[in-house]
Length: 243
Ligand code: ADP
Ligand code: MG
Ligand code: MG
Image 1 (cartoon, helix red, strand yellow):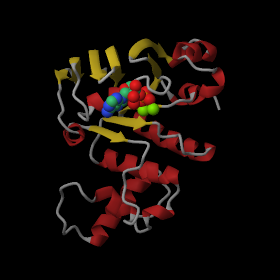
Image 2: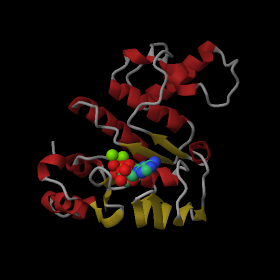
Image 3: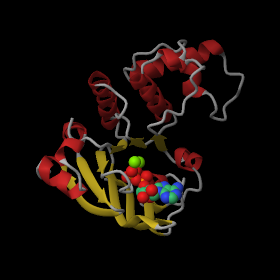
Image 4: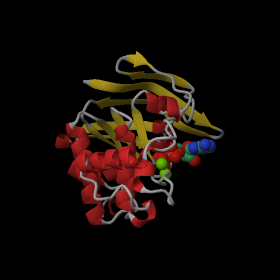
């Protein structure tokens, strides 16, 4: 079941065609990796979906209906959560405050109620953090997971993770993948941007490769060509895409 479909989308910035006639499809409960060397257009692709940028041409359908978001907030309200590599949480707030504040809810939410709700959410997602601890006392991986939990609590059916593993160690990547698997089981479709092919083989169902703004291939992971071939397609050395 296709939940998001992009057809012939183009986006030009002064002097560079960031997206050139790009097709992309995301299915329910699928982890779909988006790969390509730096500057290939990966972030632009997700930004035209979430309304950070306006596309020049093409079509984007969400659940079979044409969409045109004018802001990430609109996208979030329609169930598309985005977590960027640069964590956009507040370091000096607690975990629970980071989960629930700034979302247009009543400012009079009770401390205890908020913490209880946070505890249930963290627990249901297997995130090792306490609601009352300060965000900065959590590891980067846990902070990343808290940003994801925040999106999940806002009922996202699509989760976009732009290079979520780049500052994580091996152990932390494992925890993040566990959480992604949990969300996948709930039917969330995940767009997973990464530079590392081994991670794609480990967790993704499908991969789309971008190069110079063009979509140059879409594969099911079970039938993926050799790592060497994909790295060549991306225009990269094998060393750059494996860890
Ligand atoms: P990736 O995420 O794959 O590294 P990006 O989507 O960030 O690639 O960038 C694709 C191309 O578009 C690059 O050449 C980049 O310099 C350019 N680009 C991205 N955003 C902007 C912008 N806001 N203004 C001008 N050029 C941009
Ligand atoms: Mg980049
Ligand atoms: Mg990027």
